Length: 482
Ligand SMILES: Cc1cc2nc3c(=O)[nH]c(=O)nc-3n(C[C@H](O)[C@H](O)[C@H](O)COP(=O)(O)OP(=O)(O)OC[C@H]3O[C@@H](n4cnc5c(N)ncnc54)[C@H](O)[C@@H]3O)c2cc1C
Image: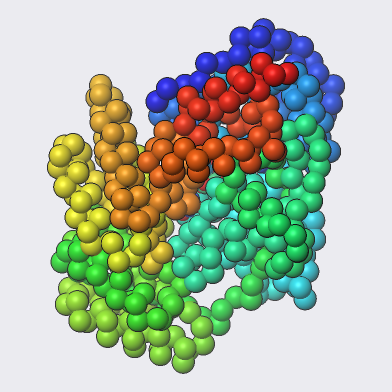
């Protein structure tokens, strides 16, 4: 992966920059020693690393505004960061940048059960949003597998999803309003506390903008009443294709499970060895969960089980109690950790039409053979969001490059069947150069024109989302015009 050329002039002014930051932030909020900035040199895409010039950890929107104003005046790029769990390299610094981490901004600002919203600072972790309201039987629906660690900031930037988003939608469907600080330090409010706030849908623009348009410091989130109950079913099949066809038939039937998760054999074996969840050793597993009252659950499951039986399952296990439900989910929830214990892997994230699942799974298997690399598939099958994990050996010269080439082919395949390059992890650095496979030059130009409006000097989160050569030249044009 090519890295951007750092601005030598900015690096030469590091002492002046650090001094300026220390004047506007409280003690302990500026990190500039290389030994300490190394903790911020990568996110969860650990193959790429680059220590930033400095890191700042503000506590308030006003402090964020002051940092951006200073960096804007000095022409210093800024990389917003939540918890650093991006799998797309979205929070990877450049050598001439300041990382602006919001981890210390984690307060609950307001909870309104009557109007069903909670307002938080965006450094708050996803799971602790539900943690703040669950005693009153409410929850925040988007549930990335990384929810214990990832922050609402990153969730908004990446428009994150999770296992239960089939029914509740992803972050954008659960976000009501934000406070955003623009690169020049201007603080703006977008959206509000209710579903539609009128005017242009700027909230839709901010959500999923990957830190390209502004730094989100506060968010108003929709909270929901906890369902009366939920019940998962574990289904085993003797091929990926049959499992894929079963998913397709469930969706076609019009029932709406809260989640449909898919795991293939390599993933089942790794999860079982790691979590001992009692999974059967078969070619493909589905976990289908429905929720509601006991009658609603029975009614939906009757339809789903009937469809499953038509696909000759080798296992059909309905959870009878909370303990069994927990065990069904245990393996799936530890899938990434389990794979990480036995192999280096690159986790892809593409979306396809659900009906294309059997074809795409078959092609991924063929690509694995062509490249000589193992693949484990685990994904949110109900909404067509695939996560093939390509297995490689980080210590073997050339293996990472091979893995990247295969990953690019898999993502092109997603686009080819009518899907897109990303489902929930974002573009980051990982897919920036593949954007040309999904968008023609006019589409890309329109997207970059939006960035021009919010961040005319191209200082926010550089070298991400847009093909490197294009975004570099855009930044140079902006610098030359100053
Ligand atoms: C084990 C594992 C499982 C995962 N499972 C899922 C999953 O199920 N679903 C899913 O969607 N993702 C998943 N992810 C990916 C990741 O957790 C999400 O992308 C998450 O939303 C990132 O949040 P973060 O706070 O860690 O953001 P970071 O990694 O810190 O940053 C992510 C992006 O957000 C931008 N950003 C951060 N803070 C701000 C801000 N305040 N304002 C503007 N932009 C900002 C960054 O610049 C970057 O582009 C998983 C990751 C791991 C490691």
